[in-house]
Image (cartoon, rainbow, N blue to C red):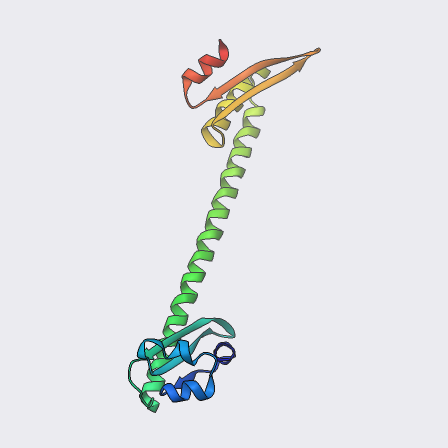
Length: 169
């Protein structure tokens, strides 16, 4: 079929509806719908990667001259390069976002580590850790310590002070 030819990297040049019917009888009704006659179906490739195809359809029969074929192939090559650049840009953005998230995590862990070494009481350290978590990674943080056979809340942090007061009540 037509799609196999294009995916194999072969440009398909159909100069009129009769060529459509002879070469691709099962697709001719679609390819010549709306009175279309000639079609150039060109692969979009970058190196050895197939990205898709571009189709140019014409309302009248036309012989594709060598110059016109070269021009349309050049347009297809430019389209393929543009699509590949967009793909690479997306991959770069994803990689950058991942690296920034990792940096944020590492920064938080470093700050939390320094906080745990500070000369403060356990309760003060845990409150500051809760505050740090809310400012960097969470909306809400509550810390409970098990003392004996009961859990005691020792720190609460939230970006909205009214919610902290609500928990304290």
